[in-house]
Length: 388
Image 1 (cartoon, rainbow, N blue to C red):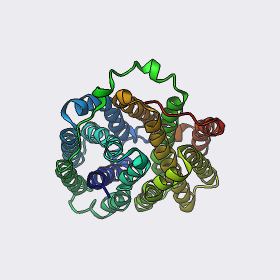
Image 2 (image 1 turned 90 degrees about the horizontal axis):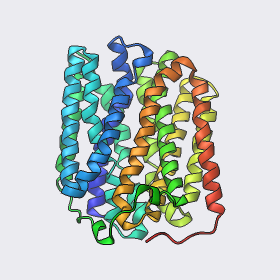
Image 3 (image 1 turned 60 degrees about the vertical axis):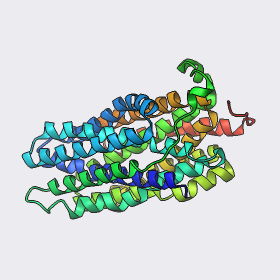
Image 4 (image 1 turned 90 degrees about the vertical axis):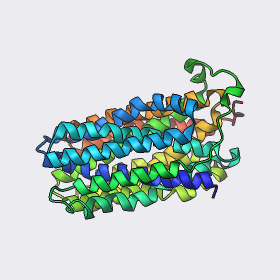
């Protein structure tokens, strides 16, 4: 494996360990702070909002200072946010806990560029493999995040304080690893000025890749965020919730060992379509009942569908962009993704509270169906040469 790709995969693993822990524990912590069900996802939503707002800033800083320095800075922001979260939990202060999500969200924003850095570290023919291998770092996070949530929450008198302090240490480790990256400076400026966004979006392939990535991530995040609430309503305990999130994260990232090979053999569109099918099957399982097995199998399907759709969409985007447009398009892509994620996370609590788990799943299936139809149509069209 390319040295830079290996380091990026490890940074991805540590960042996703933080995210996985917060996903497993945030609702439970909010509930322990006597927060209403409808507000239980606000800390997560604040985290994703911070990611959304930081993405464009990070893109400019990455272009100006290079990926290594900004990846280090992002991990340090995450460590600071996690330290603040430990203080908030110790004080029983919900607004401070929400505020702590900002630092974690900044780390998440810089972490979104790990896969793009991997794209640039390998030849064009290996891009899909580089993206999937970078995301495969999440396999470690699938075990480590929920494990920490279960095993460290009672180490101190106040639950979860020790957990956040340990996670702060992991973010510091991510900063150290990022400091060892040796990435070449971008040559995008040599390809001429970037086109306006409107001109870039005239390419239907770009629009499809952007839409597929946003829908895949948004639907996954809606169902992932809503699941702990639905399990709480079904009177399932925290250990059960942590286990479901663990299997979900494993399903998100374990396929990355093969997704790149599938894309190289079959192309990005068939893999994207397979992702849509997996998401729709997961919705079908969720509609079958509210036992632990239903939640677990449904979120495994959601994770698998996300992997195929998101890795496929990222690779498709790389097949379409011009070199001069690369930085602008990467920032646009992730801004759209996290705009949808923010809306989905803010909406998850009120939707589960107001509509119920079954209707939330039906609602989530609609945009996936639309993307599946668009991907199928694009697959049946003649292949066009990528823009240069």
